Length: 493
Image 1: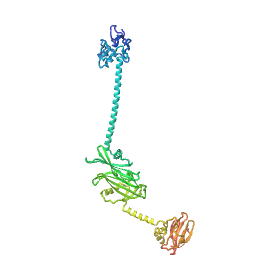
Image 2: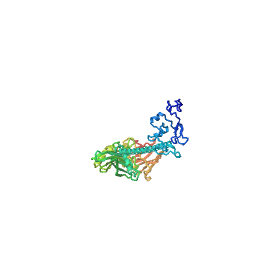
Image 3: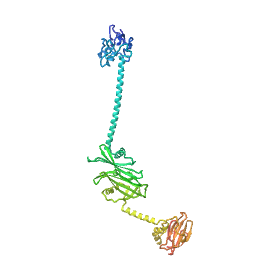
Image 4: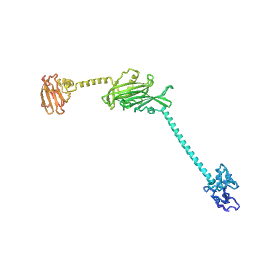
């Protein structure tokens, strides 16, 4: 007999191939209707039930023997029987005369809706696989959500840690004001300083300053944040309005040393915040009055002490503007004396020396004098003020250059004039008092040429061959005056 599986010529009486172990008898019994059918049959030709699953190959006899499984009729089980046996909790289907399997399922021939054990078990298996897949998917989604929650919790914990240990108090300060709805004034957070406590009874604190230049009343506000576990409790502790002024708290504007302004200090045993700001008049520039303010805030007493320095805004050699000023208030307290000592850290404030103060006073007096001599009505007095020393030198025989100021309006009344001469560039007049005036045709302005002094009043005027104006005086001397250059000398000395 030839083996149908490997083609080996086996003994006629052999039940199995002694080369591959396959069963040589090609007839099997239908497990449903018990009809003898060919071993390669998939569906029983009598009852139509599935006998074997062609998706799987017939196991070798050795495999069946290794499983220890046998059919109830004493024969070796088929592959389908072994396959079904694996899915019945270790038990092989035992077929009884009633057509029921050992689990009570009915397999009668008239049950047209029953697809047999192979279909049933395959559907059960597929259902179990789908159920397990759904369970795995739900578990994975729950795990992801759990991981997300843990990440969120970890992030919240890390934020709390930063709030305690961060080296950037301004970030904490701005975040806490926003979280507590304390930013409705649209102020800008300028800076914040952390005060770490070494006393267990005293909490850590952060003190910060905001400012606003947008509203009609510019202001600065001071807030104190007190540590409460992992949270901070903010409190507005001081407000200072600076009407009509522009506030600037940057170290660049103050020309202040970083690390020195602002900073936490201890003054008189009290923890304090030291800071400074400029608050000049809006639109003020060079030549106007500027102001710089030094401030000290006492955390315990919630008290703000300021010391203002007012002075003229001047430009330095580096192009930066400075306030040349002195304290506006009297320095009569420990806080203000301490603030006065911090002025060198704020280089926009220049406190003048004694020599500079004297020079400033002289400049002030001169400005007042210039103001008093301004205007056409004071032209004679100004000429005498500016040229008194030069006239002395002129009478001593020196050639001098006169200081001449020109005016838009006439310096004399026409009824007072006694003579008039002119050349291409100038008109020259004398009046009854012996004064000499000129008119520049090019600039259309008037000026004083001569006022009676040691040489006496002018008695006559003329243009000489040298093109200069010659003035005859009551003393008998003649002064030659170059109107273009403004130089004068005696021609008879």
